[in-house]
Amino acid sequence: MSSADLRARLEGWAKTEVAHANRLSETARRARSPLVRAVLTAIAVDSEKHYQLLMIAEELLTKSELSVDEFEGTLNDIREHIATEEDAIKFFESQLRDPAVASNLQLTFVLKLLLRDEKFHHIVLHDLYQALVRGRIIGQGEEWEELYRELDRYL
Image (tube, one colour):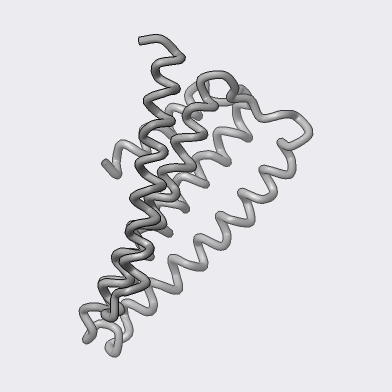
């Protein structure tokens, strides 16, 4: 398959994802049940994220380097996000231990969805930070392989 064919397929699926996100968002807006609205909204936001990632995947076919001038700023931002994710994990774990939350299965479900995302974000950001610090060649080397393996643990 040629690079142009792959780009076209990625772009085509990206359009499918954004259309799906829009439809789910509209359905969520009409939903009266907070739980139904929460699930549909979460999936709609993920579909929007999928659109963005597919567009970046298409870009990866031609470019993948982080410029030197953005390197330090990116490291600082990632470090701050790692700290925020740590705080979020502690917050959601403490909320899930609260008896008032534990007695509400719907609330527990929503908070567990959030906790799952925060834990995943924390691991990926940590591994990305380590890969950037240890090996500045984007996408190559042992540090990057750790980041790629981490995703496989969630699949």
